Length: 161
Image (cartoon, rainbow, N blue to C red):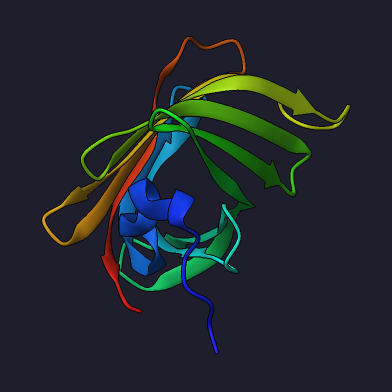
C-alpha cells in the first residue's frame, strides 16, 4: 500500500506520476536533435520527491535510437514555496538547484555544480517545469564548455500514470 504524500509536498503534488513525451535539444558544441523522455516523480511518504529521468534519441524516421542522458535525484520543498533539488548524472556531474514553486510551475537555478576529473565542464544551469494544460513542459538552459547560459533542451510530456 502506497503511503499518502507528506503534507509538505502539497506545492509539488502536480508533478507526481510518470510522464512520457518528446523534446528537442541543441547547443553550440553539438548538432540539434530530437529525443524521447520518461520522467517519474514518486514519494515514499517523507517530505521529498524521488525523481528519475531517462532519454533516448529519436531518429529522423521517427524510430527510437540510442540512449541519451539519464539523471536522478530528490526534490525537497522548503518553507515559503522554496524548493531544493539534488541531481546526479552518471557522467560525473552533481547539481544542486534552488528555486521556487508557484501555480504549478517550478523555477530552478544552480547553486552548486560539482564534477569529477573526467566529466565535461558544466558551470551552471537554469530549469523550468510547469503544467501546460494537462501536460508537463520543461526547459533546461546550460552554461558549459566555455559557452554562456543558453537553451539546451526542452520537452513536453504527458502523464501516463
